[in-house]
Length: 87
Image 1 (cartoon, rainbow, N blue to C red):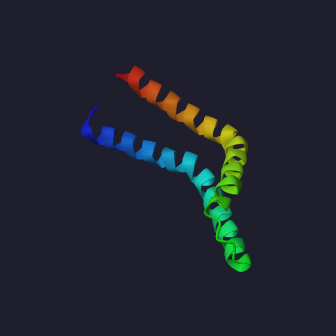
Image 2: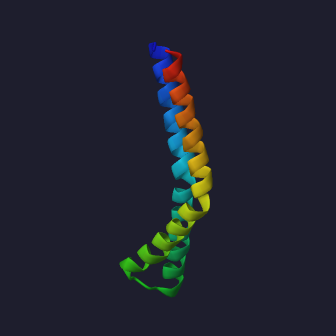
């Protein structure tokens, strides 16, 4: 494997990481922002109030996006195995 192919593989892996983790992190960001907005409007200063809704929302997002994540990871794994078999 040449240096160019290794860099391409690394770039694909980083892109895959963003595609897999991005939706869940985006859900966490939006829920955290909404809860913080509600805390500001109601003047609640409880720091632990953010964690439960954010955790539940991220868990639900993982369950919903799991088929997409599995398909992306499975396809990437097959591509790597095909590249290994080609050498």
